Image (cartoon, rainbow, N blue to C red; front, side, top):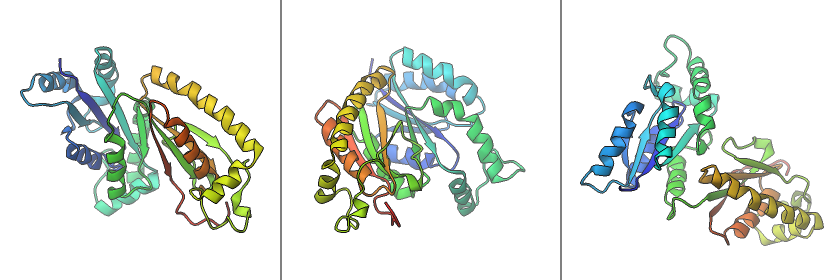
Length: 291
């Protein structure tokens, strides 16, 4: 039986599902929008028996299909029990950004009917709460434009080994909010702050001088030693639960110095193992009045 990688894309209306589907189509996935959930097992069977080489499929499924929320739990569980490699990608965004997007496109929210767009968003968010909790990956698109979202998804899915754990160490600034797509959140604001050193203030955590300053403190060394053990202990447990993507967010005040240093350190540390490891800096380019 041909092994097929199955990506289910869902999430809030206006969060970028159409962009995600087009991106995956360009990456060689066989894509279908709004397939009824009850037809999914038969669709996979047809793909397996096709004379064409269909090894990757992506489907957008959401509240537009009336039976989706009722039927998806047992169908997805059944497919996983039968050994199919299935991933659920959930796209999210803030209410304000979604309202702005609907205003720009002049589209009506599918659940707003005679009510406001905000009302439709809130209803949909409540309806999709359980589905979101089951997602293998949650991607918040609030701060992404179409091109940035496409780039993010290309990096996300263009991996050589789909079965190895993909770990992203994400630096951020608490002053800009905690990332919504983080699986673990670490606070490093207790480490020595390069912002208050005149010659380091205008640099960032990618600069060797900033890293040396942060690592110079004995508390940093002790923290990293314990943190390595903590993360190494947790990763196999996440894998055991079937999780293939892990986002570990490291936060300092502004997201420019300490969190960047630690994110890069953790990337280098865990890249030596069997995992696909990345680091990214959410707030590095933002102006900071303080760090």
